Length: 448
Image 1: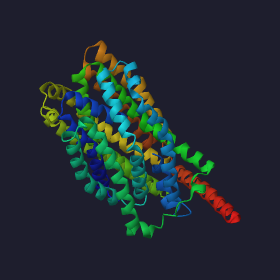
Image 2: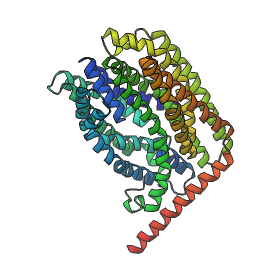
Image 3: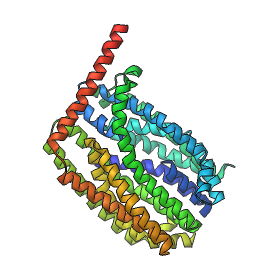
Image 4: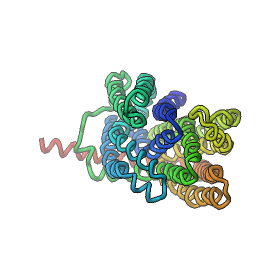
């Protein structure tokens, strides 16, 4: 399992969305804002259950059961989200966003509904493979699909009447291609065959109510952990919209770029969660502890390098997305804050991955709620509107929030973890799941 392979995979995956925004942004600042805003609105469980089942589970096929359960439950959870996407215009209007932006965002998100199930399935299948140490498959798929995505975006956005709506059409097609190609790669993978983790489709075991409840007990805190941070940035995007089209366009440039840069620390988090889960499942407490500290240190060093690069290019960075000088100038003013953000982002991602690998996602959720909703957002909104700092004020708040999360999570990993106890928790979870699967198999045998 190599960290660079995981990072490349997430960089390529995020580039799929970024290419769409870059291509559409050339239509003008309004199209850039609507497309990037929609992408931000639109975009855990296997990290804990999956990685520990692979090394510590009683059956190798337990992992495929977790995978199937993850896909089905996430599809169910997505249903109310799809309804919100389909009728997002009145919601956005109610909070005071510009009418034209609201209409465009709703149109884009209605199309993205068709690609979302494929995105969920692709992500779940990718996690299923990563839990086994199969990292290259998703990367190779994205290498193949990325140029297809670029061609689709250029053609649909600039050479058809779809214009801006060609972006979500291209993305939806791309995500279905990603899932289909990764499924084929999984079927052909010799490593996957040797691991013998696929036990076939087992709907009765997958949909066992007690197992689903246990799965959701880990999944929902993980979703809350990531979702609270995501929602905080969406609130910042909404606040930027109230500052005017220029601020929203600059925010779109910054957030789209940050999503790409975030793939590097996020890669550390994925590797950390998988590695920690594997080591706990293998009952190696000392190795898990060392892996946690190494991940945190590496993420901070890489974050420092990214910060330096952003500071050196801040005056020209905005022109990557837009030819508008005002947009580029505002981006250059906010970029020092975004640069400092990278160190905290690296630490938070790495330590968040460790907590997910331990099955302690609820701690990350608590830290995010306090850091963003008690500190970051109130401070940022006050600075932006009461002290007239605009977009810079919003980002000062976000920097404060993320440093709070990163430092707090590392203190828990460093001082608040009993690694021997975490090994015992891993053993208990695997034993309970194995018992439920055994009972289900016995019931099936009796009925047949």
